[in-house]
Length: 325
Image (cartoon, rainbow, N blue to C red):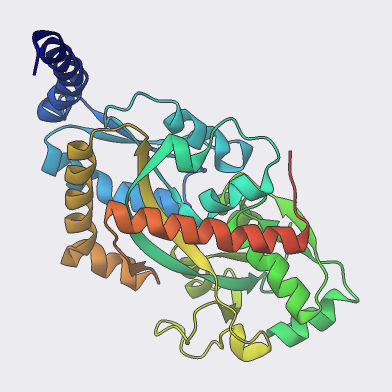
């Protein structure tokens, strides 16, 4: 090796170390200040419930304050964009419905970010099947009766967010059952639930985690559950598949993401802590009691899952001809 080649190799090595060193320093010092969990929906929905459930245990594990901030708007895209464009330093996390995130690129003709390029998955936390519920005054006790009623009586269907998983699930149920309803969009699940309780809307599909308490209190009437089998918490309620939509299954997947470029050491530490917290007996029991199922994934498994979800929902969106600006 001559002197010129050797010098070039040393310069390249030095340049590589210069790039790696800041990232290593960030990872080694992390966390050195408070961490934000951004929930891109209004308070009271499934993502918000889980964010607040894990925030204190995460703060204790990382020895830094963990603050939950709700940033609703643009059907969840406003808060997601905020995280996607945040520094890749591990201090801004996104906790959201991964299914909705996978749907957005297919539904929206213009997005200022690309979830698959601008965000990196940390891990999955929980799965909550959808419940098909109605206002107690609606004279229907199953999907067949609801579909028949919808042809003679105008029914408003509360949509937690346009283009969300509950929205597309509602479209699929409408098409499969022959029902007809008008979609009324909201900024999150909690507002959709409250308006259905109040009677402004009559029909809703939403994650069981946020919706079950309203069913148990009698404020909403449940007609179906979107699990492959009946829920142990609602054994008397038939699945939607049992009611004529063979193989039907839908639900809300809550996961955590960070800006792309976040150091792997930070991502792995977050993944390990979140997995431990969500699997802890206390947190797991609270989720199960409300109808959610603990469902964890590594960052690599999360990435594979997201890719499959994006492909699946792209086909549904194409078939339904659903496009939003």
